[in-house]
Length: 454
Image (cartoon, rainbow, N blue to C red; front, top):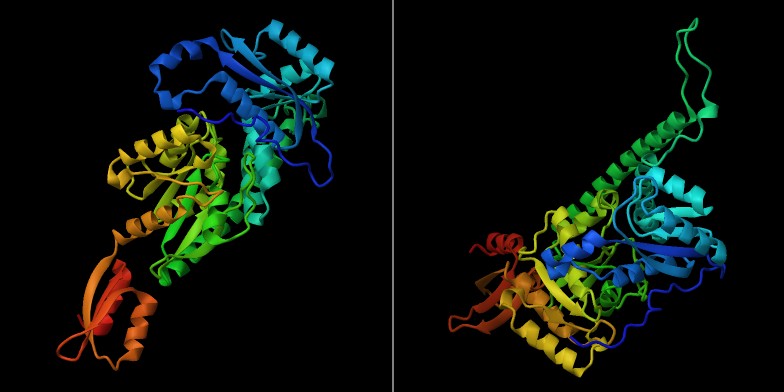
């Protein structure tokens, strides 16, 4: 599918309030040759070019205001236990760090605490891996207390596993009497104990958050508005679509993880119904499992949603791989690809040229009607009306249609129907009673039957 040339600067974050950058950074994308040989056996949706991975890693670094002075692809035959990359590459990157006066090196891969310590000694710069980088972004994006707690919980679990023995000279005095007592608590053990105590306190507070969110969901069920949740890869355009559908002003920008804290807004549908639209945090490949666990309370909004809109950036060259990554995270939440609540939204069609647009629409039309994606442009509004109609149709599949006959003088009863159900039609019958056809979900249909005795 032909696409317009993607702007490589699209992931650049606007300057911080202080107008200063975090530091000069070198981004390293290790690429194992055995991965290249193994790509042929993997599904196309799972594959990414090393250049695309490097570009995404550089975008993540820029998202915390790092000045990426050198993105570098490094090909490896195998992983070295001590330094991940070979000795020659360690020396080569050390030269780059010195030449660029870089203070940070980002390794776009998981590295062990020992590898991190050895590389920092060899390069004389701070080294962070992909997990640490994503945690840093989340820490900066969190605006609510709930979001800050969730990020801190994930960060402390990450730090706990990366404490290394560099404080042995701070061992406490031997314990016990005589000469049999062993060495007392080391600084390493004390640090780990402090972190574990803090984790326990945060888990207690997160449990309160979980109970509060459940109370909110229960209160919404008493005045039941269907929940429609937006999910998708980071920078797929979820917040722009959210603003388009709700006339809200949630931060939307062409950057990675522009939105972290969830936002909910009510939306009136064309036929009088209302829904609650939920904008959630974006997903990304290799999203740390500790973050998925920490944000479980937030993501329960997605788990219990009536309709889930999977927003995809169809202008991105790795759209299929991004979709696969989102599906993996959803699977961790118990939402499979065959879930009838899922609706794919093919976003950013305004970035495609005429031929690519035609092929995209033809591809969408060939899909089964129950699984047909909706092409839209959240930026221009094209296709959003069709998306809203598809949401209504999906919600109506679970609703019941009832025929009533009421006294025309029962204005209060008719008003009650308009408030609690969708009135499809009303006509005067020959016997002088008013025939009303309504549509409502199961709970409201039961209330209608009880009120009108049908």
